[in-house]
Length: 549
Image (cartoon, rainbow, N blue to C red; front, side, top):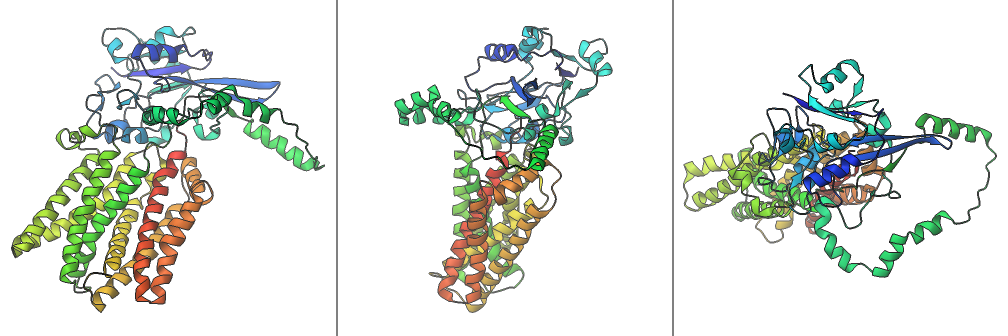
């Protein structure tokens, strides 16, 4: 069997019966939905039309949420239904980034991921999903697509259907009859805050845990005024004077553009889930880069004979790598909505997920560093040499594995860059060089060692700038990725990127090293570390500003 859905937009009247039935069937909290109806309006009065599109999980044949889930909490059944087991979910939110259709959310009550599961409990006893039963126009059709006798199979054979984001290669099994591109492609309409459920100030899903605290901090009078819409009413009824330009050509051009884009607007939608990967993810990428670089910098000096490493610098690098590795683990666990279940990553692993592979890389790297310190202290040279090279390999994997995790997050096009592993590896070397340059203030140093660190810092900054330019300037194949670039270079993250990431984190360290004043070298290292964090924060947050539904 191969279950799927058809939404017949010729019949849908936007009544939300499917949404209500779904919420009732699964006892869902307010603010989150497994099924919802999106409204799009086109044109200008009186030549207007309204389009309805039912949004939900696509039950993909090649589901990216299943692949990225570290504990197999999401899985594909033998009948093609993508189901979930919230008893295994650790709340890592990776599935929400992997889904190109915005179908998953974090349940505010259980703090675990949830989505449409095709009402599997009903299907197992021979019933249809609740949304199908309740639809008054029979606009939602479900069934076995491989059975030629079913209605869904016959509709697929004779009707022209469309699906959402087929270019992702997920093989979605949710089809639309007369699906409109403006309704199915979220980037064609702006997300507004001027319609019902378009925003929820207390947060939805993952952010609902902050709701009570934010409510308690709110001013009741101000909230009442906001709910009454007084500010919006005054703004809407202000007397405005428009000065005519007298340029008929400009008016005609504007009218032509209005016709082309059909003045499409989103007038009803589900609440925005926000950026579910926040500062914790950016911080753990930053600490992970330091943990890897603190070992790789002296390793490269020894392995390739670039410079003799002072004895206390070797121990400093080993201790710092272990310390920041522990801090990385703390941040990783802190970001989970179910932190008590972190051990599931190691004890109930789904090996296709890079979150699992990365978790084991962190554990093995920490173990190798520990045994390396012990064997070095005991002067066990043969074992020390094996652990030395093994730790270097694990340091590289620790630095770069998040790039492969991001690549599994198919919902975010900007993260699919093939240069991302190199981006993170260079950041590790740059962070390590910056750290040791700062440490020369109190550690023993030599001219050769300091020269090596400064050269590595300079090399890292130059290569980092080249990689960033490559990721931003190279033509991107999708509109989502192009829009992300605009957000980074000229949008809400532009100040952090240009001032923090580029000027403070790359240009200024180069200038300080160029001046050649030893007192300025430590400042160059500190600015480089700040720049790495600003860049990673931008790279993590900006792609999440793109709507997926």
